[in-house]
Image 1 (cartoon, helix red, strand yellow):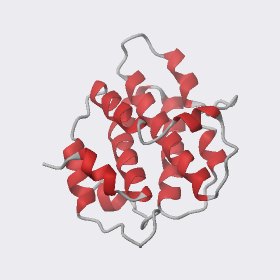
Image 2 (cartoon, helix red, strand yellow):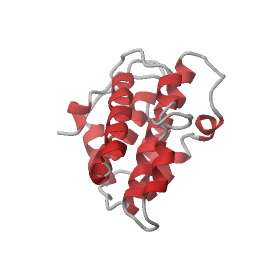
Image 3 (tube, helix red, strand yellow):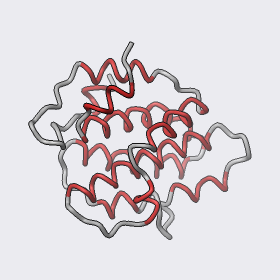
Image 4 (cartoon, one colour):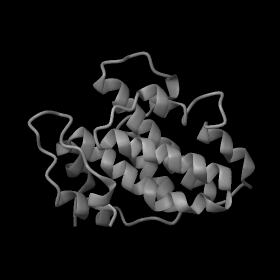
Length: 170
C-alpha cells in the first residue's frame, strides 16, 4: 500500500500533475450526458495533458476553463445539474484538476498574475480532488499511485520528466 502523504513529500511537479489528471480522467465520462459540458471538460483535460507532456500551454489558456466569462468555464456548468447529481463532484474534480495544472503552468513561467481561483488551488487541493472523486464513485487512488511509482520522473530539478496519459491510463 502506498502512502499518499509520502508520495507528495517526494513527488516532482509533473508527477503530482499526472496524479491529478489521472483522477480527473477516471471521472470525466460521468459528464457524457451533458454533451456540451463533456466536450468542454475533455478539451480542458486534453490541454492539461499537453502541458504535462511538455507542450507550451499557457496558464491563461488553462485558467479559461476554471475562471472566465466564456462558455468554457466549467464551474458554470454546475447550474445545469440537479442537486445531488453525480455529475457535480465529477465536474469539480475536472475543474480542480485543470486549475492545478494551470497553477503550475503559471509558476513554471514565473508568472504571478493569475486569476484568484488559480491562486487558491494548491497541493492542499489534492485532498479535495480525492474526496470529490470518491463522491463521483472513484476511489482507486492506490492503483494510480502504483502505476506512477513505476515511472521515473527524476530529472534533478523540481519539474521532473513529463508523463504521457498513455503511460499511466492504459
